[in-house]
Length: 409
Ligand code: UTP
Image (cartoon, rainbow, N blue to C red):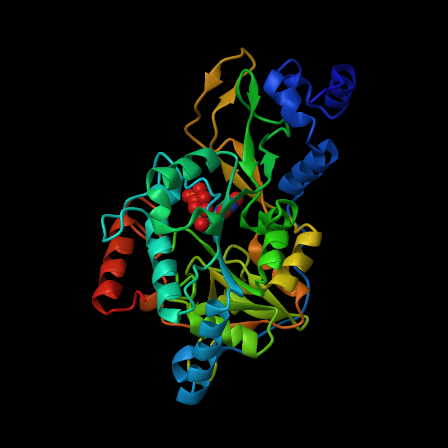
């Protein structure tokens, strides 16, 4: 890439980013960065997002366990048909940093100490089993979103493990976009003297990445109509559930989401609702006390259906969301930085802003969304932390229990 250094220098100085002058890697990376966006992000970090206005009402929910037998059978048959005919794909978002788990390497390479030896293997074997039981003799196309930070290591892991039995042609890696991290004064962070600190743009970056990296095109070429989109770190994720696929397809939902009932009013999960009549998720950090605790006459939470990052989209809906960006949210993180004296410092407390888009901010694009409430113990075992809540120990125990109950089909 040919870089006009004089022009870049002037732009950096004008944008208050003069500290980056002379960093080779920064010059390359910065050539692709919108400095105006960077100032906008800093404003967002300092001033906060505009308060969420709009009329919040409950969203209709279908309880999977209460489905009449005939309806359930119809959904399952439809889901299996779509899998068999190659019209269904699974997308795994594995671009996160996994900072809380503290594992060296991509989170998907983590060995939980169960039947499979990594989170990627858990997902691969589930997809292969489902494809086999649905008939048709073809594998479910599997798209894996990585980030620039972990793409190489992820691909090598697949190579080293012979793709877990998957045909290479059916696994498609694509990277999400990155945004610079900013210090509390709005300066782009240098993490080494010659490089700037970029962070993945959040799981909401999936739509733009699928659009720009050729995923949608590939799906259309293969005749895929529906895709499941989920994370890597729920070790019970049903990433190819015929019931859920049929539920979305037969009802013609552009987008569907699985939910489960919140454990308590303050569980750290966003909840589904409608905002001005459109599907919406209120994040746990933004929910009011009143909304979190509201119950109906039976004592059930009115806004109790938690979003668990298990969604199905039609390919048309994915395309639509990819055409436009989503808003960014701000997180405060710890990252090593270069101080004024040119030394690398590893801080012991958060020192920088990171910007992320959230996948559920796309939901309001769709006129309706199907919500399918499922059982927590069968489908939700997040692996976030080393110890304590949502940890290696809890995820392993939940996985073993589901295996024993034969719930890992
Ligand atoms: P989390 O938000 O829990 O983040 O991601 P994380 O990276 O796994 O962990 P921490 O917060 O750094 O400890 C939920 C899911 O979304 C994916 C993650 O890989 C995980 O599957 N994700 C998150 C992305 O693919 N890209 C992102 O930019 C953020």
